[in-house]
Image (cartoon, rainbow, N blue to C red; front, side):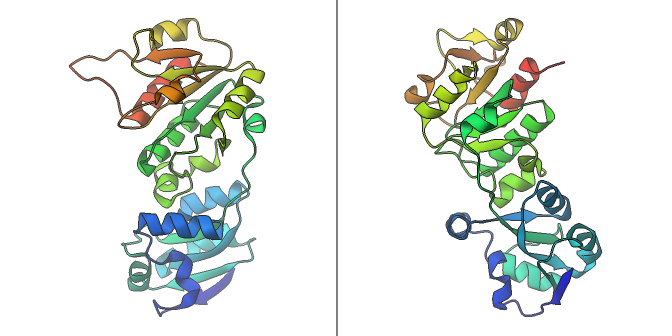
Length: 267
């Protein structure tokens, strides 16, 4: 492990970790540099195990031994810093001990991701990184074979998304859709039916849909506030709803994804 002690918070070697609380800035910087930030030893380990390459690691002194075992075969600089330096640079208390600046992998095309998939989750227009991370965790835990992220969705590799997903964003095959028509055509070419979760007069209940579940299905989930747009709904083959009680009209998008994935997953 290429270990360097850094005690100056203004050291330019730490620039990848600077000001991580500014969401807009981080999204611009990470996209421009082709990087994302992995937070905590567990998440970094899962990223490395999935074949992702770090550019560097910033670790607090008391967490160095844990990082050493992860990075023993990875030839990149590891910057060991005092707690106060880590907090000053990142802009928050890095209580999980370590951050890694990871090179973004090249995403595959939609056809490659869904080729052998029986259960797919499509996330459309979701802006909250916490919901993206929670949806990926549900996908991993409840048997989704792939996740497709629509063009206007938040970044699954944003720091908060990765953290909330507990690193499962590295576990489930996924890619970002560049064009709705092409992506849905790729799904249909594989015999995958697109089922949108939405409120609609012609919607069938999730329980009824699960009883006659098609062999291969993609669940389409919409944004937290407005749900799926009319344009997005037009790409669905069926509309499915989760019946609600108690005056509640809908669930959080990640919770709804978990319910639907459980209902349609293999026992």
